[in-house]
Image 1 (tube, helix red, strand yellow):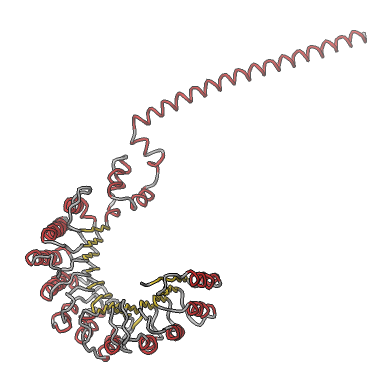
Image 2: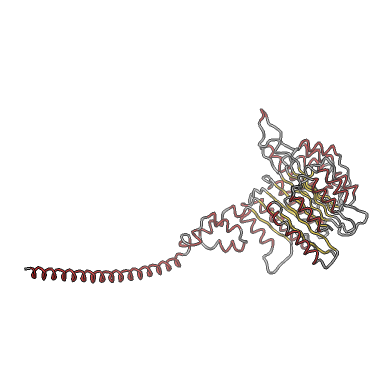
Length: 516
């Protein structure tokens, strides 16, 4: 019986082994079947992908909106489209409906800059066609327009420029454009290339646009117009008339006006009685750019009276008086313009009293007469930015030392930016420059192009390291009369390398430039 039981047990074990082997074979068969099914599924998926690609090619625009570039948000596309040129924008406009919709966003077309030369070019589209097409189709979106004009060399070129500008302004007026900023620079109407009739027609066209399409303007630049007294006053009068109904509605009107080089150079504009009245009527001015030839006691008095008063029961007309006061006055004094007029220090005192936040920026070009500079650089002027360019030929009877040691130190507590381009090969200005930097406690930016010693650059860097000055920008260009400056450049490089740790608080650079 024991043997029978043992045989039965062996039979049971054998059956179990067979069952186990059978189970393993069944599992292998199931795995093989699953692998076959997976392969079939993969083939089906590949067929579906192929069908999807075919559908993508057929449907085109619809699939682009879901995958790839078409899936980008409108904000990202807008940022990308902002940097594209007009030709690239036209191509992107045809990609899909989504891109087309983003391309029609008004924010992409609010700024435009035109460079007009009036010359024909067979490799480019004509300026009138490009300009007028843009104004006709997208002019309604414009808020900032800049037009840079190259002065014509012939009457034919002048007529093309006049036609283009007139068509542009007419299209903008017709489209009801609400410009916030307008800049028309470089006209130079005193050039002989402008015929008298074309010049007058262009001025009338600008004046007409100011009366009809400049009601929303907040910034205007007519820099480099060089108009006559009659033409310049016609433009200013039109600009003033366009702002009157804005003041009645409590709106500030024009806040920034750049009239640098607006009148023709040799004209004594400061003697014209209508200029102070025209600028006084622009009551919202906070920033003004002028040539020094326009400056007079009457003008300073008129600027001091600008501003907004209070309405009844203490209610303002939209802007308080403080916001309407002048804060920035940019003056440019050129040797070929009238700058010998006397402006009383009391006039400056009255202007500063009414405009306590006023900052004056003065740029002097080739005025080397010390007496005339003394009339300009009065102690009462709230000067914060001074730039000076001397003549590029030797003036042995002129010295820059009075400017550096006597005139500019008057503004030790307000002067912030100084730029000097001096031809001082006949005298040394190193000591005066170092004293000026240490005296002016508010000086932050210094740019000097002059004949200097390399040791002066080292002393300036050392003064900043010892915190004896508050400079955060220093740019020096050392003039040299020698052609071979290799040793000097190596010495300068060594000096700069010793102060590389100052880059965290001071942005500085220095170089040597030979002058022949």
